[in-house]
Image (cartoon, rainbow, N blue to C red; front, side, top):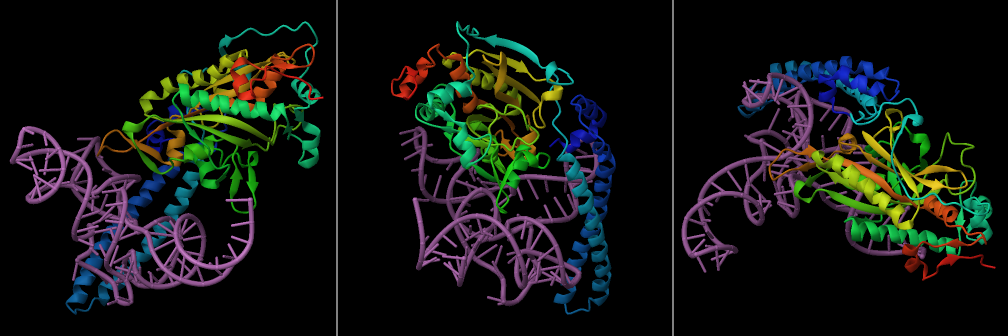
Length: 427
RNA sequence: GGAGGAAUACCCAAGUCUGGCUGAAGGGGUCGGUCUUGAAAACCGAGAGGCGGGUCAAACCGCGCGGGGGUUCGAAUCCCUCUUCCUCCGCCA
């Protein structure tokens, strides 16, 4: 959520920056009217409440002296009714204002390129050499199925489309990647490991910004208002909801492994085969809580941590700076890391690293104190995938495939694979 | 799933039956000081958070005793509801 006071003071500037996102801002225009009506009502109601408080004291005094207070009580009854009316209208106005503000996206940072679509994202670097195959390379779902380590058909039987069984060396590879990533981030990059709940409540999804606008993207479980998490970002960011952190302990950095669940509403027909777009996948998510002045440095570091995973795995990738049209609802600035998928001849998103500034912190009420007794300030939150594991498996299978159908295992993963150097057909 | 109990400020905790003089006793911790070679202890002193309105900034005002709603001139205190936690019984990975 945006800072109401800031919006009040800089309305035209905010609106102009938001318009670069290509958002419909019709509702946003009601801000000024609602905001000033709100303050008007507060002033009126509070004046009457002050009057009531004073009168109540007098009535108490009179009662104690056994005097008759009927006159004062009668008068206050009317004041009370008037307060009730004003508070009623105030609630309505605040609900309306809240409705609007919860649906306004974050303001893009000045360093974000202005654009109309994903075509306007800016590539800022590439790493690694794209492999050349002396044979016809197979897509990862074929490799995986032929090796007997991925089973999409049986997953369709037990569950439905966009699900998969990993088996044998495939399941082990998944586990190896998760362990490798977590070890790297905790041992080398200084993160605290976390294993979060995979279900969250509505308040948490609102805190990180998935709700109220994007409810159709999430899976609702039962009637308990529990949602399957679309990313560990949600539980881990909300870990500190409604807290005031000690400034001396910042930044707080967490590496969380979790399953992620996405309804993929609106993606029907896209990436229907393989591991790229599943309803369920695993991911190691990196989450930071930092002081405002440190968040942009942290965004660069965070992106570097995700890149390091790909470098150690030897997978070619590129980094894109997302333009205003492709930022997502909550980010002020975002880098996507895309890994090379040989058979598609393109780079595909495998990580997304964002600085939300205080947008999530405001929604989730996460603050810090610079020192004892100081006023609480909102933290800045950031997160990035480090990495999405399903897509990493896809990239590994394709980039490391051999002419005989086997797949080489990158050296850094071999200790996690029982020393195995390659995956060969099980039969 | 059944039966009880609890939620007060950074922490512990009184007040709730008997509504008003309770922004809320007391203790701990915190901060400053005395003492000490230094520390601890002891003693003296300080401050009670947060949100909103208001202001150049203050003053000032309102809210606030888990959340929401109600009764009342007035609610930490009475009523309803929700959430969370605890104890016992049952079931269970």
